[in-house]
Image (cartoon, rainbow, N blue to C red; front, side, top):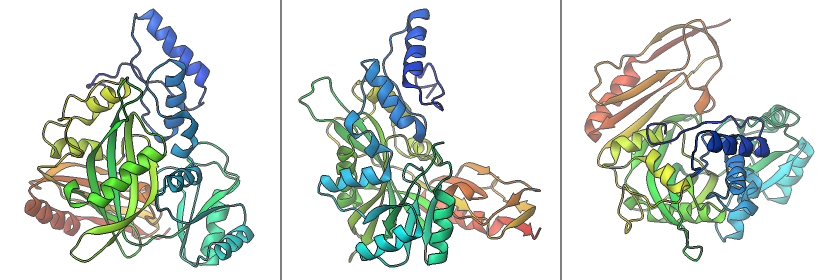
Length: 383
């Protein structure tokens, strides 16, 4: 983003809209700057940036739906009000609430329990029994959530089967209030999971193959009031005859760029696309300079795969082996754990041992994926 034109980055940990607005106005005066836009660089910055942009008279998303872009319950309410399919849900503060809600909503295990204003897969529990639900409730309620706020109630959700997708979009608004925002699908990713419901791989897809999912994701972004900037829609869909996918249902939507280097990898896979320049153009209400106006999605000309390296045992990391130097399609890799670390079994994206990103020809990526998985060794001993 700095290369693309971002000038200043401010911490929003305290979420003090007045203070942040004041700092920006002082910067503008002291350095003779023209403020053009306010961009969230993380999930916890989403609500603050819209408020600050509004105070500065800059482009922002619809303010009366600000909670629908962060609170997963409010999010579902907004999406349902738009006539879109959602998972059944309820707010719960105890196991008695969980049991009552499951009865009222005609749910049975597995269910999902999560922090309402969480992010990514953090504080998200797939529960298959009362014991697992009790553990999840204990982990969530009365504790500090990923966004730094105390959590008073958890969100219970119907567990939705099917294949998980991430659909990333960019919204462009004009200064003509009568013209609806243009929402461009920038990239589509399909996840492959292990039997333990852990993430195994994510691979880029051709958006043209998933018209029902694109329409649904775009409608979700509109339902929660996204008019400028990025949107990251996570959903599940059913595979139907012929290999197509139908009946999408939202997991969540984030009003920000996606994580996991998806934006960077899409830039490598889509010719002449720069997501960071487009993000700046969107938040400053400029027309997007890197793609034609008459298309609804971008098409990758290279294949990309994101490999998640799991931790299969709790204990002390004794040895790590991963050979990537000879891979023809290697884009980048990252090992999060190191020898000597005490680790837990991988349960979500952020608890993986590491990651590898590959980009190139599909056959070569497949070959290199096999090489990665056969070379990866994580030796963990009991402590």
